[in-house]
Length: 361
Image 1: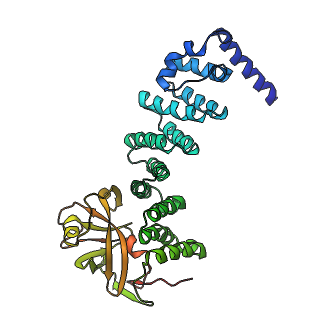
Image 2 (image 1 turned 90 degrees about the vertical axis):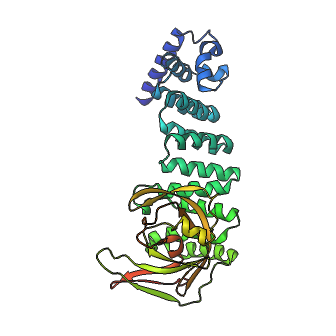
Image 3 (image 1 turned 45 degrees about the vertical axis):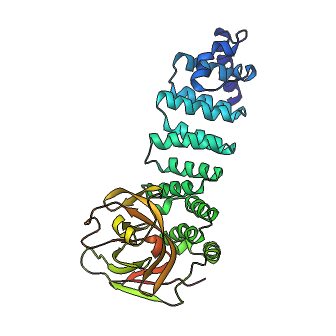
């Protein structure tokens, strides 16, 4: 029955194609305008495939038919013409404005071809049209990594994680792993450990295992990251209904008042404090942060040292924000987030938050 239906569909397609001059006409002449609009060119054998011919005909009649461009891309992909299946929908979206899923699919196809330059070009368009789409940033990060532009890749992976609007526990480990790999390619091994530590901290019961511990230990060994002696800890009372904890923190030798915030992905500091602490951020990539007050912007940078009492960490990713004096609270210089906290075991119980050096498994 299925075979009969398939034959019937093919006969219908052939009948329509024949009516359009399928057997005798030159595809390059018949569909020259469609080829120009899609920025592709098909050889005659491919163009005369019954499904291709009919779909091209639909696009000739309706140049912005979203279903037809989707169908054409699938057909060309199956025929082995993946580049045309990628670039055609890309140029279609540039001309017609939609659908965004076509850009996602185009990047996927270009990545499979290892065509990272065109993948970045399409991803740039995806990000431009959908700046808060986490997939757009993730795919561009992958493409940039393929080109060896690891600095920009780090920023895109950071954005993809921050822009994920659902439960962070549902983010694929690949976003964190690729971010770590990009940092490692830059020779920044302490920063490379941070995405893995952050991923583990989201669900330590299932993620704190021998595999992740080995990855973290390898990065920390290469970066000579561990600076806190064994069995050190700091303990702070959770006060008031808001249970906000402030602590004095030393960053690059500069003291400041910070809110300990396990919900913040990064150590975030005001630009005025960053200047005092000599954190180089002016040329840092701008990323988006998901905060309690919504989305915010900041420049990704690095603190050479961060010290909280007896707990120390080296080469800590930080985000510098150009905000007013009251943004974090009166006299508060920033947030002590997970890019520092994830390097320690964090426990909240009995009205206290306790940080201690990590125990190796």
